[in-house]
Image 1 (cartoon, rainbow, N blue to C red):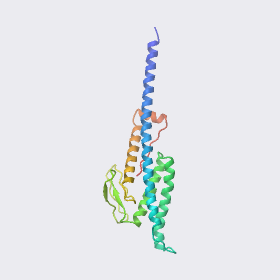
Image 2 (cartoon, rainbow, N blue to C red; image 1 turned 60 degrees about the vertical axis):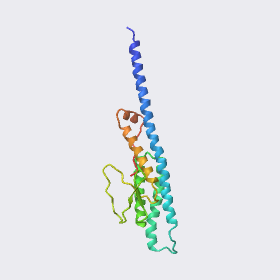
Image 3 (cartoon, one colour; image 1 turned 90 degrees about the vertical axis):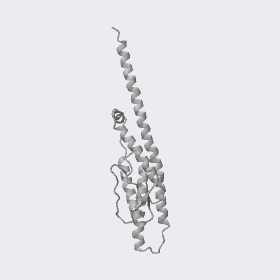
Image 4 (spheres, one colour; image 1 turned 120 degrees about the horizontal axis):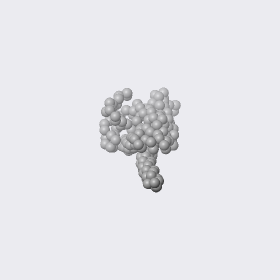
Length: 202
C-alpha cells in the first residue's frame, strides 16, 4: 500500500501548524510593536512634564544666600526631577521591562508628590480621554479612592491632557499585549520566542 496519502497528510498538518505559528507570532509582534510605539509617545509626554518642572525651578525667586525655607521646598523637587530623568532614560532603552517600569512609576509619584507640596493649587487632573476631571485636593496626603481595576489619573504638573492620554494609551497597549501572550495556544508561541509580560505605568 502506498505511503503517499499518509505522507501528504503529515505535510498538510505540518503546513497548517507552520502557518498558524507564523500568524500567531505576527499578531504578538504587532501587539508588542504597539506597546513600543505608545511608549514613545508617553516618553515624549513625560519629557515635556520634566521640562515644565525644571523650568519652574529655574524661574523660582533666587536668594543669595538661599533661605532654609527655599532650600527645603526646592531641594526635594529638584532631586525628584533628577531621579525621574535618570529612570526615564533607562526605561527608554527597555520599555517592556516590568521592573524598570515599576521603578519609573515610583519615581513619577515621588515627583508628583513633591510638586503638589510646593504648588498645592497649581495642578489639575485629566481623565484618560483628555477631559478635565477635577482639581487636585489641596490638602497634602489626600488620597482619592479609585474604582476597582482602574488606574487613578495623575495630577500632572503641566496643565495638559497629553500626558494622561499617552499613559492611558500605553497602559491599554500593555494590557492587550499581556492578555494575548497568556491565551492558549498563543502562549506556546510566546514561550517559544521568549516574550515576557510588560507592565503599565501606574
